Length: 399
Image (cartoon, rainbow, N blue to C red; front, side, top):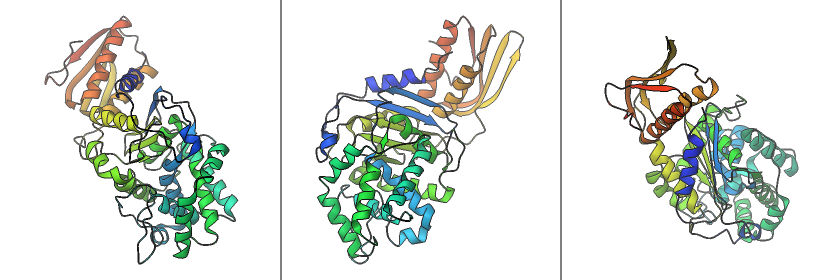
């Protein structure tokens, strides 16, 4: 049976609304991007990846690199040393605001440009080249493949780097950055020029969602305490001066980039990435924000809407005569429904009747219900019979 989740994601793209906004015109290479590109990818903490749209198109990672380089600096130096150089307070400022503490010179947080330049300068290395090699290796391990730098984007950004150069010099004047501030500046621009696609970004976000462990390789890329801190800062600062609206309407840790990329990491469940180049006045992708709002609403992803406590949703899968019984329990949301669907996809049933026993299920949210209805229909299309045992009427079996 083919999973219905990619079809659902395609429907989300079809209904995310007409695109408005403008491409990032302060970077010549980004100003030339195709404004109609659109893609979304969802990676589960168990390693499944679902996509729709232009998810193979490579684009520079831009500010989505910030939480990951911040994580590397924390891994290298520890929390106290990094905190002495970069604060973790929401600034409410635009991404390129000159926002330094008047007393200490610290940037407000690592998600704005000043904080990100400082974070790059804190990564350890024998020289600037070695430091960037470590950044590229770290981000590549998160993505699950070797990434490269788009040199044209790098040169394009360096030709318009006046404001960021001013930030780097200010940071050096307060000893937040040591050595030549140009080294930290160039390292920061290079990290923003790393090429990624939606699939890479979804897997990177899923690594954060799984506590720092890569969902496929099983490698612990980010320490648990560092991972928690990064997600916390993404929650409060990742969407710049739109962070309050984002947390109210979407409610997951996130980070955006001016190339039109956007990631979100829902702890314990999924990593999500979208790509659409046209931006709103905050520098966030217009259609990307709409996609995340829709997914959050459908999937119950908002952090302030946790599921009821319960054990694994799949209580058992067993045979009774010519029936295959799939017994569920607890609260069923997207990640739980996806696990059941994946099991049917990987181990198809050859029984005459498939029984979904929901006797112990408390509730099913909208997207899980939609997935199960689609599974119901596809099993019928495969020539099987489907029965739903639903004494508490949590599921309407009418197709």
